[in-house]
Image 1 (cartoon, helix red, strand yellow):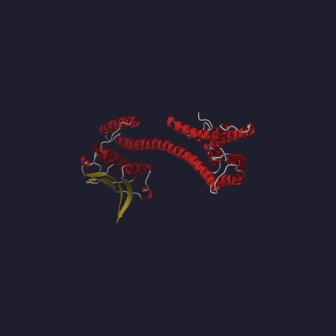
Image 2 (cartoon, rainbow, N blue to C red; image 1 turned 60 degrees about the horizontal axis):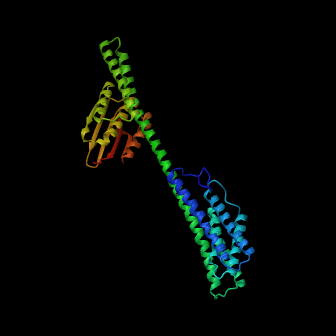
Image 3 (spheres, rainbow, N blue to C red; image 1 turned 90 degrees about the vertical axis):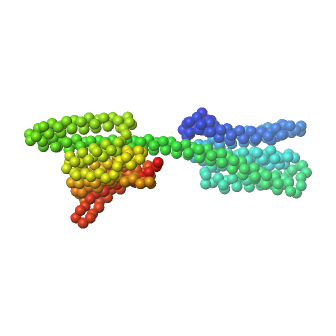
Length: 398
């Protein structure tokens, strides 16, 4: 587990854990730069022990507070920003330590790491809307501490030195703040991408479930409609023509057996639609219902990738004709050119009160759209003749 970041932190995969650990340790290990001023003083021969202790305390303060600020910054979605008073007091103390380094050291550059490291942690621990203003304020305060300490400086330096050191510490503060924010921003972007991947996987599962539901709806609706039609016909033939009734009852049993077999195939994902068989079945079923059906076009001209798609449209159109119309004729047309394949069912006997597209057509539209096509169902009025047209088209990919 990454220290400083809670167990609820996003990114549980191995790669995400490694990146999170890298982000954490790269931010924390920068704190080692705070030890340079202590080592610089310890290397001298005339440093009073009290001064060395105070400098070591400033170093420990820098490291501890930076780690705390960074930890809270990485948990930004789970905890509020840190207290402003803590930020202000911590930065004021390390800025004073920086001013002391300017006053006593001939080369105070390493002391600029103290306010810079704390500045990076503070910026991560404030709200995103305040980061720019807080960074600029800390840069100004660090530069002002440098200029305020210059009158107490014992080492000789030119007139340019105060302004150079003030600009240097301001640049350090800005660079460390930008570095820390960029590092955390990169981590946040990776987390968002990882979350997007998870959402995409969930959507893929949802689409597959919808596809399965649409296939099951098409098959069950088609077969149940046929079974109901055959059952009604068998009921009318009993007592009038027993031989025909027995024949219809046998077909009814076969339809039920086929429905069960197709349902099992859909469940196991093995069902492949044969467009020719779908059209033949639709012609037989509509013929049994008294619908004169004419087929135009050759199923062999429909590319194999579109066979199942067009078969689903024919199956849905046949079910809709039986369920929502009093049709006496139907025209089924297949057209294919070099760029587009089309299928169209046109039937009469339309009830204007029941022409709204159902869930079956909505599911077909989604499946056609996945292949770059579209489905349209519309009522066509030509004088006294009113027909319903269900058509679909999809690009041909050879």
